[in-house]
Image (tube, rainbow, N blue to C red; front, top):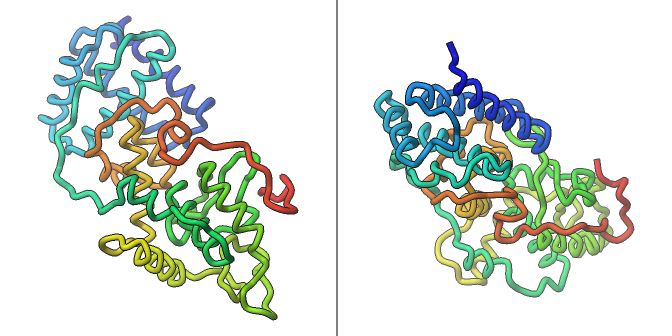
Length: 321
């Protein structure tokens, strides 16, 4: 039987889930995951005699994590539960229900899984730097910026169509694994690079050729760009910048996720941005220190800060799908 304190805790959880569903528009699976994690926290609070979230302190959170660990939960699962609790307490704080975030005082044990190699922010800036003055460089810069700005997979970038870009929202719709669609933000720098590219897109270097009507990125012959072509262009630019090691498109996606999580406490929101079906895939990045992420994209990502944008040269808002 649920106690009066437990009912109050559950009411706050339900209000938070309502916020995720109706204000943040997160997917049902993500909301369900938050619900499961918070239900476990409520159960712990009832056993510990904690009647309100304000009464939950750092030592309580450590005891909760230790108890979960004794039950055999992995470091990944503990990181996920802590991430949910941190995000929940951030929301409680904004609602004036608590002061402070006790979950921020606790780190989960790690499983030791190695994080994929990433670029640091200085290396990203160096790779993106330069004057895009011709057809090829404008296209390449737009490709690099979009990879890093939105965390796209190579197949998602190559498969993107012009109608997938929503200029009024500053976002792009992509089709990921399992043919699942998602919409992700495009930062202001990437928007500007895309505008510059689309202004010259139809001025093909190879005469007598026509453009693919749909593809955002095309080859100099006018056909949709291939994955091999994208990799070769990245190889070219990393060689010109004398960057160490091989930089591949997925490394830019890893960098996007790592840099976002360095400034965030919302693992599930990053899961949504990356299009991961299972949060365990996203948890490879949880070695990073979590901090509060008030606005997951606009305030956390180094090159985000989106701007209202106009459609490029001759387009209209009706071009979006």
